[in-house]
Amino acid sequence: DADVTQTPRNRITKTGKRIMLECSQTKGHDRMYWYRQDPGLGLRLIYYSFDVKDINKGEISDGYSVSRQAQAKFSLSLESAIPNQTALYFCATSEGQPQHFGDGTRLSIL
Amino acid sequence: RKEVEQDPGPFNVPEGATVAFNCTYSNSASQSFFWYRQDCRKEPKLLMSVYSSGNEDGRFTAQLNRASQYISLLIRDSKLSDSATYLCVVNKGSTGNQFYFGTGTSLTVIP
Image 1 (tube, rainbow over the protein chains, first blue to last red):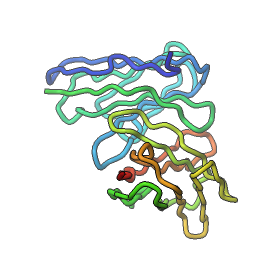
Image 2 (image 1 turned 90 degrees about the vertical axis):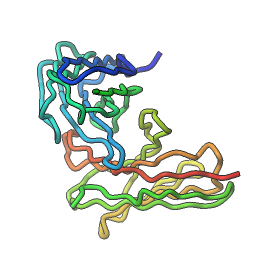
Image 3 (image 1 turned 180 degrees about the vertical axis):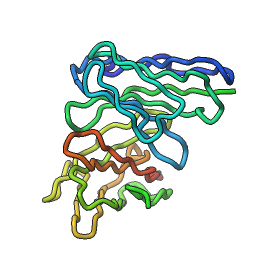
């Protein structure tokens, strides 16, 4: 079983819909991160959390929110999805460094 | 200026060749450096950390040049399975929350 699991793996939805991406980990790491990856732009940090209830904005947090209710789970929400949020999303965990990534969620907003 | 810059390539090399990638970073206070490998549509996976003294893992050698603010990755005796995108990652902070990713360098090893 994967140490960092993301669900769903793929999602296609319409503009304006609320979307939640889930991340769970069995590594026991305190630190969790959400990134998005776009062609030619590399990975960009959306939000990160160093502990339960600890939430910090990353480089591109606008239009996103997160929840860290348990050490093992970190969810990312798009309250009202828009087409330019179409991307590959990765969750990552770390105990300091380096980071370990989930399999990714491919999200398409039509 | 981007925090981390890489030549996107693509690098197309024959099997058995030696290939090198460089990555430059803008912040001299950067503290930790890594190379990740990413296969098409898959998650990045840690290839190796980069230490100040340079380090080697089999056919892979990583080096850090703090004075010139770049890190390098050398792959010797390239295999078909080395075909992937190689991401340079720099951690600017001591608290582990400021990872910056390069856009990646694409490598294709040709039979």
